Structures are given as C-alpha cells and as structure tokens.
Image (cartoon, rainbow, N blue to C red; front, top):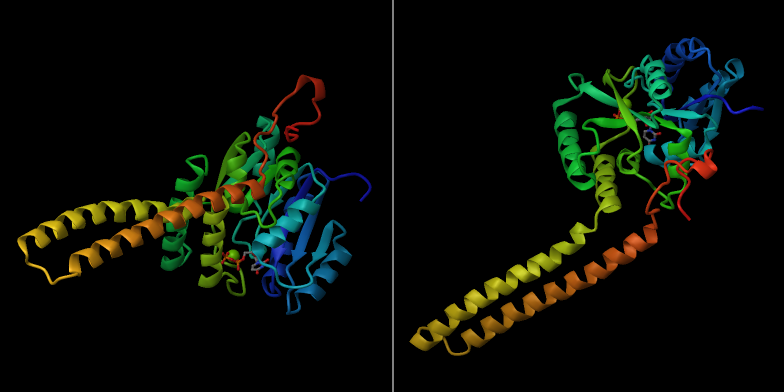
Length: 320
Ligand code: UDP
Ligand code: MG
C-alpha cells in the first residue's frame, strides 16, 4: 500500500473457519460503503484448521484484507498487539472475528472520533443477554476488580472492540511491556474518549476459544500488570500477626502468672508467634522492593504531551 489508509480494522483470528466467511460477508460492504481508504489486518493466531487457506482466498479477492500470520498460537491479546502495532491507518479499530462485535458500529465510531477529535472510542456492551450466566458473572467480577485497580476511568463492560487514533496507537507502541492488557492500558492513557453502545451478539459460528483457564490468565495478567498490591499482602498479614502476638503474649503471661499452664508452653507459644510475624513482615518488605523493581522494569512513560505549539504534529510523543 503506497499511502497509509485512513482506517485499519484489526481482527485476531484463531480457528474461525466457520465464522470467518460470514464475518467477511458482513464486514466488507460496511467498509466499502464508508468511502474512505481502509485495510483489514487479519491476524491469524496460528490456526490449525482451514482458516489460513480461507484467509488466502479472502486476500485474493479483497486486496484490502491483509494477512499477518503467527508461527504458533499466542493468544488473543498477543494477536491484538501484533495487529495494532502493524496497522498503518490513522484510526485503528479492533474487532473479534466471530461477529460478536457488530461491525455496523465501525462507521459510528469513526464518525464520533473525527467529529469530536477523540483519540479513543470504546465499544461498550449495553446488554449481555446472549452471554451465558457464567460468563456474565465472571465478566462482572472482572470489571469490578479492574475498575478498582485502574480507577473509574475505565468504562464498565468495555472489551476489546474499540477505536484508537494514530496518536493513541503510537502511545501504546511506546509502552515497553511485551504483553499489554489493552482494556486496562487504553483507559490508563486517559486520552480524550467517547463511547458507542452496542449489543453483544451471539457467536455466529464455532465455539469460544476462551475457556476458564484463559480467563483466569487474563485476570492474573491484568492484576499483576497494574498493581503490586498482592505483594503487599504479606506486610499487612505480618502487622496483623504482630497485633495478635501482643494480645496473645499478654494472655499467656497472665496464664503463666496464674499458673494454669504446662511448663514451657508460654515461652514456646510467644516465640512461635513472634517468629511468624517477623517472617511475614520480612517477606512483605521484600515484596515492597520487588514491586518497585517491577514498576521500574515496566518503565511506563510518566506522561504524554497532548499539545506543544512548537511541534504540533507530534501529539502524545512521550516526554523525553
Ligand atoms: N482468538 C485468538 N487467539 C486465541 C483465542 C481467540 O486470536 O487464542 C480470537 C478469536 O478468533 C476471536 C477473538 O479472539 O476473534 C475472541 O475470541 P473468542 O470469541 O473465542 O472469545 P469470547 O468472545 O468467547 O470471549
Ligand atoms: Mg467471541
């Protein structure tokens, strides 16, 4: 492609031989009807079914459909990362390949971003009626926890269906982490943003590639990506044990004075409590340091410059 397109649509695809043709059928007229230059970046996450062959065929009669293929399955988030990093467009929309995110919302997102000069437009799920009871509740718990970690800036129920401007994409590319959790990192950027509400549809064909194990991994990645507070747990436990230790030491001393104990019990008991508490505090202390090393290694930029009259073109360049 000689000049950069206006819009890139990034689509992680993993073993979607049933869903992909239907997705393309619905997506293409919408993008063609936009009247802007675009590309679709199909990221094949190491599919093992007929998906790669299908993608080749799609590419042949739809030149705007680009193929990025992974050597092996690396996960939805990794596929998203590759797609976002490789997209050329001034705006980048990420969307699932199973039509759960209705592509009809893409024009709306683009219009909102261009009209209001927004850098991020979140697709927010208005209704999860078609999801299973289990998925709704695990997702509910996930979003609750994540809002606690990132703060209220994170729109509730915003998944990976969203639009990013080139400025936001460049800011994300400046992040040194290997495995970013975009649904946390994007709100963390705090760039001007809007929302488009949509109804999460049922998967058009095939079945989910997000079993419980992958959900747990995403949740763990999300927590450890954004917070060192689990490391601090030992410190609090240690302090708590100290308090308990003092109370029990008083009790043991009284019991000893009254003479209602077996010889040796008081000293052993107090010693045991004391050592336990000291150990927990020490582990907590280590945690504090590990936490700081961790955030130093993450090396996230401290700020993004939104505007500088001297270099108007370089919006959100990291401040160096
Ligand atoms: N996906 C992927 N790699 C994986 C799992 C999923 O690229 O290891 C893609 C999948 O093809 C789809 C999107 O990520 O486009 C979301 O996956 P899925 O629909 O299975 O998850 P759910 O919607 O059930 O959470
Ligand atoms: Mg899905």
